[in-house]
Length: 300
Image 1 (cartoon, rainbow, N blue to C red):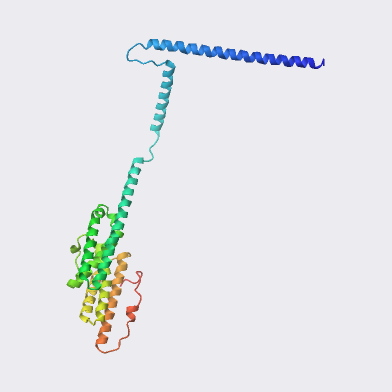
Image 2 (cartoon, helix red, strand yellow; image 1 turned 90 degrees about the horizontal axis):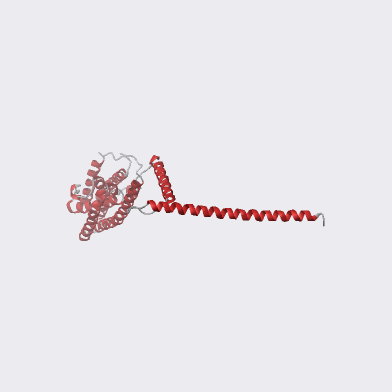
């Protein structure tokens, strides 16, 4: 229509102008790229012409500027890091971690090895109560050798002595001193035990009173009054020495309470034997059946 023709002409003019603008823009871009490449090639030619000495290698100026910029950036980062405070020593923590791993590995090996020492000592006590001295001596020798093998590791770090190794040594002291008592009728000294320390020695002696009391009961059933009295005298003498110590609250205090209880049992056994020997009816063995006092009991 006559009205629509001007609109069509205007639309065609806009299309032609847009196409012309695109072509001009692409021509300018191509000419700009050509000029940049020509300038860079000319610059590279002059850079190469100035690098005539034998020791120089060709490096264009634009690459040198990029390299210098990277170096300046690295220097800036280095200055920034140097300005920061060091909060901890990572190497030291790595060393501590390795030491702890080594400590745990040594501790686990000691725990496993002390089980054999503990088992042999208990079996030796069992054999002693059945008068099998030969077997008891073999077991004690095995326990002693096992404890001495662990001694270098324990001496290197005293914290490894507490716990399983100390418990095994106390059990060894109990078995060894019981064997010595049956053969010699007296206590074994600390010096004769070589590798045992004083706490382990005292703990083993406190446990020994239980085995001596058990032995006294067996002798009482045989009406061996002198043997029972000898057991009572030993425990009484040991109690008289231990009462001088201030054990406070700990494992030795609990063991000391058991010494008092064993002494009381031995006194009751002797009393029962005296009544039966005199032909009198005893008041019964109620004292032997009383429960053992706990560690929280009185400290007489």
